Image (cartoon, rainbow, N blue to C red; front, side, top):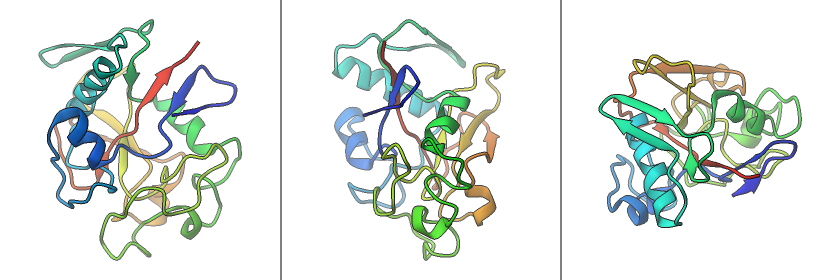
Amino acid sequence: MVPVPGKIFEILNTAGTQNMCIIIMGKNPSCFKLDALPVEQVSWDDAIEFCNSLSKKFDLISVYTINGKNVTQNTSANGFRLPAFDEWQYAAKGGKNYTYAGSDNIDEVAWYWNNSRNTIHPVAQKKPNGYGLYDMSGNVWEWCWDPDSDNRRRSFRGGSVWERAAWCKVNTWTATDPNKREYNIGFRVVRTVK
């Protein structure tokens, strides 16, 4: 976990890996299997459950309450959670105003359509951004928490290995059904620290 300067949260320096998912959840849902790869084929709901399980493992207060399709967030909890939409973007910028997370040259910081050879890559192989965070542009999309969502669509950010450069910019995002699992969507956890 990396403290984010000027903010009250810390963030995992890479996307959640398959090894982490196996240790915390006891399973690996990914299509592309390798411990050091980011976990993918996880829905937003799966990512929320992972956050609560990780919190319990470290004896922290779980952030999320799950009641069927309704998920609420306890903002005073000290457990792990998904980054809020604006937290993700702030962290991805890394204290700079680059087009991509860590550079204006996408090839320095991201696995994407032009250089990925159509496969996901192990985390932390490209240059990090100014906060020491890897792969916030490219490799796999990352789920975010949408405080104003109606629970029918949830956002994800950062682009993936199957996207053109425009989709990997720090200000780009899209959304889908929270139950959807894709071979190019993963997540990264954060934790509020005071």
